[in-house]
Length: 236
Image (cartoon, rainbow, N blue to C red; front, side, top):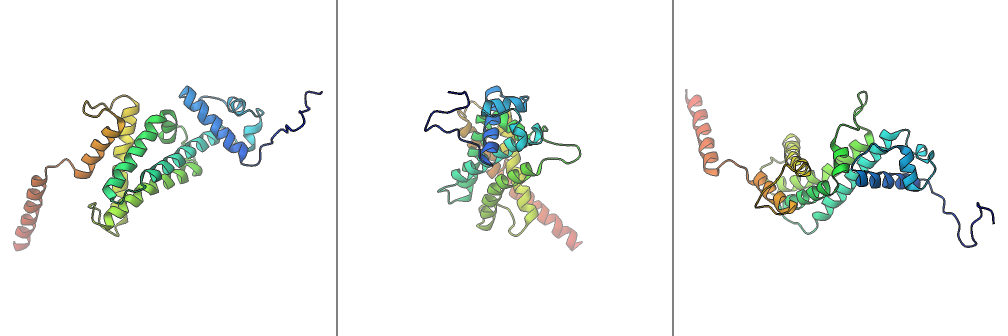
């Protein structure tokens, strides 16, 4: 039997358009997870995927395009995980906490992919981030925005309704907190004796974000002082 022949009943399954791309992205994620680095070559990715060394060029012009697809894959997983975490969460505050925990879990379980997603590797001097990455990030961020919008509309969060700028500021605020905590945890710099797990640490930090760190009575006193000052100026 010639080497190119196959036993009866066993046909070589060709890659369909799209199957190859997914196989290459999956192989790249596997290498990234295994080595915690993305200095692998397209040839190594092809070998891991079990295809010819020229196969990646059918879908990716260069390695940066492949890494962009890996980052977009990460954002899609993040989007799905956060959406799944929101199931059954009818209260916006509970939903925001659940979303944040899901975010933290993803980042800390996939540190290399997370660094690739948010690091400078994919930035190009002439064109910035690849469109694929921008769209994937926006889709993941939209989950958070929707939770905050819902909390604004029912009065849970102090975000003025129908104020896009205020809503975006809130999105940036909570995303900064959770992203920063994720990076600190990955780097081994976020430790808290009373928080034994990443879930409990996230719960505590997000709760502090929701409630604020300024003592409420002081807030009320300061607000009263400002009102009195405005009245004094107006009377004068």
